Length: 295
Image (cartoon, rainbow, N blue to C red; front, side, top):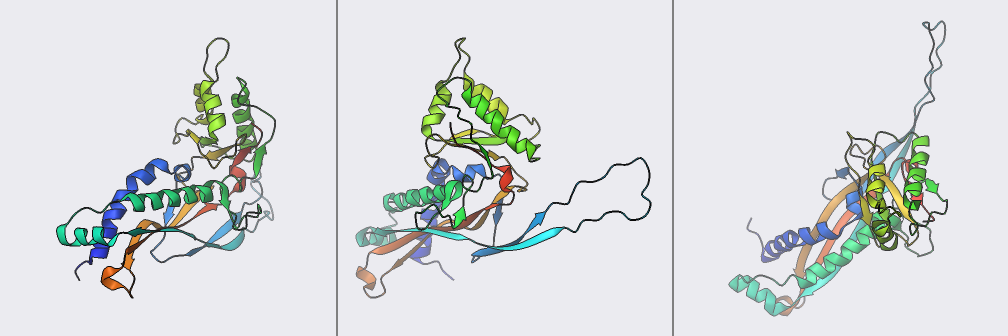
């Protein structure tokens, strides 16, 4: 079956939106593991497993009964989130595309994609709070973090960033989050304080902070990132977790465009576009994330 002009144009738009979205999206960069679902998926069933108790050590083989734990499994149904934004294309531009093969102006679509990307970062880093009352229907990485290094460590003072990162890593280590490197996500204020921070001897603090985040030489590397979704004075440590043991990103649909026209106006209708995606962050072990809540 031959492609319609709408389908051809949508594919052209899909290709054009990938590079700018890749540059702007911060939240996705924090997820080393993604789980793509079949098209049309809007929820996912998965099991949360409660770990068994500690193993025993002895110097002889067991006699009699061995204590046995039952694995506790909690079944959860997680709904995916649909993020979308509409835009319009002028009819005369559309006709030129159909009849003369002229490229469509992507400005409206890219503007819509930019807004969609901002909403995606909001969701993945903070979460979805539909009523604006700090009651999150979906928890992002910062809201969903169980650990919180809350000691005051203003990044404007040399050495405080190192102390805060080390303090957060100690909390994670105490919860057996080991063998991984970490990303540090900051508001622009703290990011540039860290970039500029140096000792009286001229030693910059940024390289030391980056080294602390990457103590596991054989594991994928973490980075220091800046995001408008982090409130000034707060930061977040999140693992570079390629196995998805602690967290992953479930994707029902990557960003794509749908185009059509008003069925009542037909040949004189503007072209209506929608860019949309379907996804949800999945936090399996909240104690694998740590807030830095007073920096």
